[in-house]
Length: 89
Ligand code: SF4
Ligand code: SF4
Image (cartoon, rainbow, N blue to C red; front, side):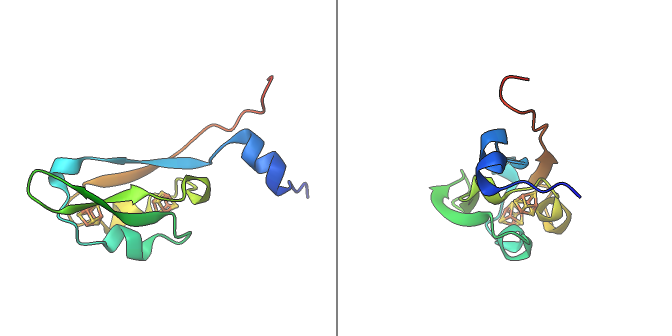
């Protein structure tokens, strides 16, 4: 089975990202707690309701698995997988 080293992986960029609907978030941190790769963290930013928002603090760790989305009680966040084309392809 083919393997890739860390530099090859970083050349290809992150595997996933999250999309957050800030207005829906209530700052409960469930998404942060249940992220299996510890990619999320609580930021210092607040939404208009005054809740602290999660952020993708370690974007290189996100694989787009969408567990954050499954556990968010307010459908405020979801993860998506990204295409990972090699540079120059
Ligand atoms: S998509 Fe998966 S890896 Fe990325 S932040 Fe959400 S739970 Fe973590
Ligand atoms: S689980 Fe949802 S509501 Fe809770 S902090 Fe994360 S995005 Fe906000």
